[in-house]
Length: 404
Ligand SMILES: Nc1nc2c(ncn2[C@@H]2O[C@H](COP(=O)(O)OP(=O)(O)O)[C@@H](O)[C@H]2O)c(=O)[nH]1
Ligand SMILES: [Mg+2]
Image (tube, rainbow, N blue to C red; front, side, top):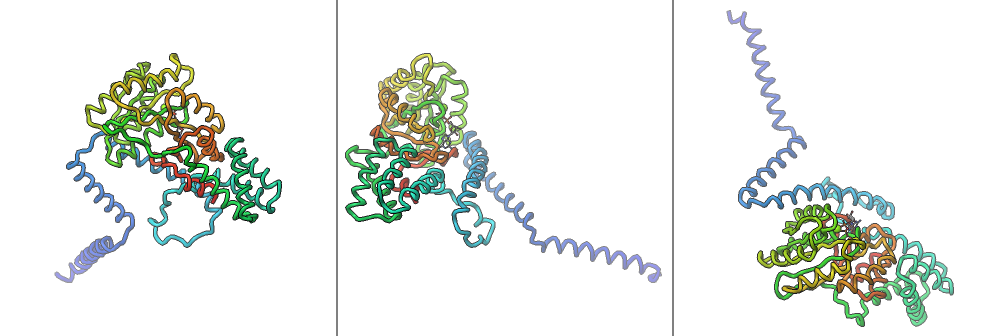
């Protein structure tokens, strides 16, 4: 009888062994995908735990989601910039792991790639063949073309000529070094008594008014500033005082969410002064540290823009003080920016400049014209569209990035 059952027993045994083998193989398999999934699950569980404890606000959740998208966008941008850069540099050793391959945050030098290439080409032309009359003419032409401005370019060349003669310098690299020194000295000239730090009021809320023509980057700069302040533990409110365009406060709302700031807005077409005043009272009542006021940039509004800006200032100063009126200038607008700046300076009592879009401009020389011809300090620079793409302006770092 047993003999009759033997084939079935053998088949059964074979099946059992097959199942055991498959299970053991699945356990041993070092599958990257399974591993990744498990890591993700763990992270998700951790997040779920944290969420339950901290109960983040809706704004914070949105911020997280949006920043993920933001990070992806920035990586795309970086990729493009770094492709050009890679051609200049020698290929380094290959990274060992996928993590090591993640691109580091671009430096200012990377961001200023267009201006840097412009200067590199023009300076090698000017300084390449030793020092003669052409050297100084070529240098002056290069500076003017980089939007340094005629007056300032002439001044720089004259000073460099004297310095080169005094020190007996004629070699291209040394001349470049001397030029860097001159440019930094011009930025740092004490006679203008520049203070590049952003001023806080002795009593909160500190109020910073942000002005400039349309499209220069006011709203974006406010978003970046708010994010930086929030990261430093400050409570931030944003006033949507650009009531001219309906879309303007929606854009500001997105930035408010991203930067965990509070937004105060009225109906489109409302009086910008009233928005600023309400926002000030709101920030004070909530004990917030900084109020950033976004303003309209259209020059031909119903009420002339300059009157509107003076009124915003007056209204806030009934109960507080505006410690910064930041003029946002677009580096790609070149010398036009200087004309705009003169108008705004009178009306809004500008205390400093935010120079945006330096990443897209080959004419970073405008920074010199702003400081030496307008006497206004550049306090911040915009080097991209991302939330972290705002930096304090430091002349030495800037000049080194431009001429290195
Ligand atoms: N590449 C680059 N784009 C910028 C920078 N700052 C602002 N922008 C872009 O400039 C455009 C106008 O900015 P917006 O903040 O709306 O200007 P506003 O009209 O002055 O408020 C937007 O597309 C921004 O993303 C910057 O530093 N670099
Ligand atoms: Mg705007």
